[in-house]
Image: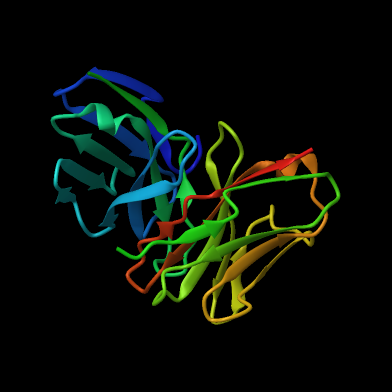
Length: 112
Length: 112
């Protein structure tokens, strides 16, 4: 598999449920970021977690990072129909001015 | 809230023609990037730019591609002689020293 592989590839849930998306990577990282992309639109930054952090919260988002397993998870609590989008994890290796390596993304559908 | 802007939003061109994609990064940012996303595929890094020079480029970024920061605000990507396989969504991103990369809405390029 490649750097920044998310699973599942597609997730369909009912509004109000929690959505958990996972990402695995292969090489050592400096930061891991999660982005959202609505169909055919730009990438919206959601949250950044550093390699020395284990968990981070932002509103309804909770991100965890396990560097020993080279994996991260994004939890969206109390999902809304507006959360329907593709979600990508992206890693960088050296911090500022470092390229991001993206996964293929997870398509989340939240049914009203 | 400051944001990255890109023009045009859509561009259709004939194979072999030159295109210039324009970006206005967030004003106090120092690091600039171009990425592309072929339809249905993952976002791929093209090039990063800092202090008026290329910091890193990918294998995709061959001699047909160039970047420029012609003034204090614009950041451009030029494709000298477009190929069919250059059809993609092109994203500009910028960041400050805090490492989060903020993406523009993208330019959808279609090469016929």
